Image 1: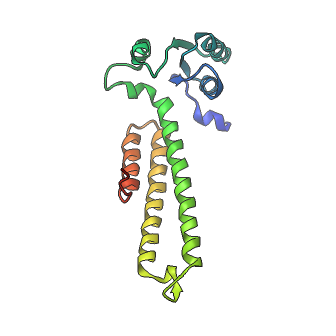
Image 2 (image 1 turned 180 degrees about the vertical axis):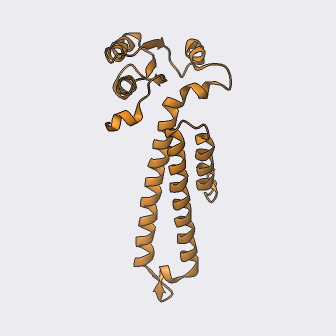
Image 3 (image 1 turned 120 degrees about the vertical axis):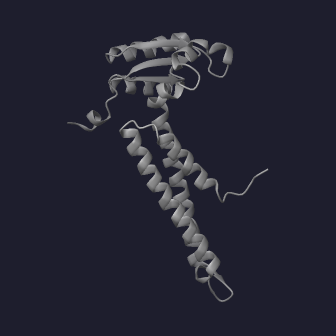
Length: 189
């Protein structure tokens, strides 16, 4: 069994906006190659036809929905595909779940880099005749940050495991992680 066999999407439907060209088209074809049928949405129908042909060449079905998703008046057919009010997210988790994880991972990486920079600063500076890292407040802030990073890693592991087994608790875990990160964030007006 290959790595791609672990991530099969047979029997699933992915929805890709911006599927007319570039990364959107590539993502639509990748979903098809993983076994998903794909709903394709973009402004230009001619480009959607090209992407639809590539999805069908991968042996999957493609539903083309020409629409500018920034214009609510053009989203009627796409809304019909998504489902009833408060039910739509159940249908689009194939698309949203991995994207959410990518955002959390990206921000976690940025937070780790910022923390490492802070540690370098704390160990290289002196205040009142001793290392900045030797002061209680600096130690407290570093410890809090380490705890937040560890908690986010753990929550991310739980969320990825939930995504792998298609549990719906993933959204609550991500919201909890976001709230944990915003807990000490200053208000910016």
